[in-house]
Amino acid sequence: MRTRASARTGAFGVPGALRPRLSVHPAHSRYGDKPPWYLPLALAVDALGVGLPVLLVLGHSGQPHPLACALVAAGAWTAVRSVRGRYASHVLGEGGGVLGVLGDWLVLLGVLAVLRTAFGEIARPVLALLALTAAPLLTLAGRKGTHHHLIAARKAARSVSRVLVIGEPGTADHVVEHLAARTEHAYVVVGVVPVGNARLQCGTPVPARLAPVAPAGLVEDAAAVMGAARELKAELVLVAPGPRLGAERLRRLSWALHDAGVPLAVLTGLVDVAVRRVQLDAPAGLTMLHIAPPMRRGLQVGLKSALDRACAGLGLLLLAPLFGIVAVAIKSTTPGPVFHRQTRFGQGCTPFTMWKFRTMVVDAEARRAEMEVNGANENDGLMFKMRRDPRVTPVGRLLRRCSLDELPQLFNVLRGEMSLVGPRPPLPDEVARYDEVELRRLAVKPGITGLWQVSGRSDLSWDETVALDLRYVDNWSLTGDVDVMARTVRAVVDGRGAY
Image (cartoon, rainbow, N blue to C red; front, top):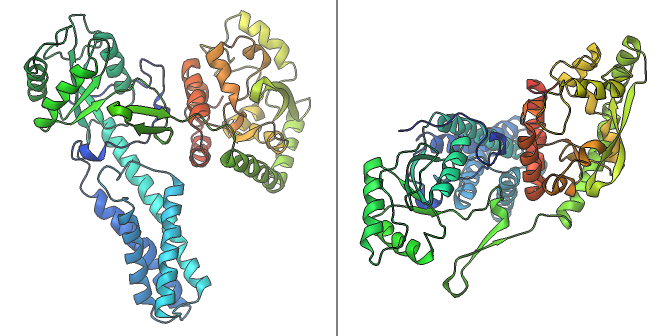
């Protein structure tokens, strides 16, 4: 059994766009085998990505020993990345942040600087630096390509680990449905060993059951789990602890599994917490997870604000001609103002005036109430969305398709009311109907783009939208913002959900 559910959302209402780019644990990396060409491809991309530019730049500029310099640079780059664990089987194909590659590149520059000092000046520093700039870009491109291949393979139930879930039926159902909803990870559930006699709802095979009360000896639980693992050829046992599967019972079961060489993983019950926020501790032998709070202040927050305003100012200068073209197109085709101003709520429920290019007829707001009464809203939540909204003008439809209507929000970013990346800013009537969970979306500045923008936009349900925003609010980082900005380009070109 190696089929996987094709549904995009699971028991927790979390869309596939929330994909955590995590690998299996290094101790389990021999399971869920990946294509064998990942390693030689990574080595070739890294070596050639440094060696060829160095050879071409130094050779073309007449610098001495270009071939030797190229070989040394290629060897140093692959050595640095090897020492930093970039070629480990549990890392290959799993994606990764830009900062990791840039960190490797800075280490490379340091190594080459030491070698240059030791062996004397060989090439001009400016030319050498120019030749080395292609290395991180090509490495990132290679990793991105391998990551997309691995995700596609896992969606087709390849390069995955066969998992046996153990837990109380209700918890096991949630685990199975949640794993089935996200097909980019390394786990496919092949069976469940429930604790107790309650019925499972997920329809997964049940090769054995554990007694609702912990047995006196070590044999009963171990025999049932090991028999189920052998029958289903499970490569990992995933345990969801509960009242009937406590610490001592789990400890005894782990002895049997580890003695038999079967990997064991234990669920914590946490959902959508970034790995970087988790720290392991073991006071007095008790395994403890420390969960760092979301970043709300500090260096990264200040840097994000500074980058937002700098990029917004630069963007307004560079896009000024495009603003003029769009303004002429709007003004010449429909009566009314070029810009649409609307009250939105930002960080801490602070109201502000958001700017957009007008994409609807002038009386659009007045007509919305009537349309809602007539059941025109196609969104299942608090936002009003229609795939073919009659209020949208022809020019407005094009602007929405290309996301050009959002560009005036760069003024809001420059004023500090918005960010380049963040949740979408809600309307006052939407905020008035928010519950405590939905209000958490306003813990950070709203953004021009975000996980909602790159994950289907209006095609997403309200629960999916909230889940995306909460994941961002709790786990945001500068590297995550860079990734969202890069994915925004693809989302704009694709146009999915833009209406």
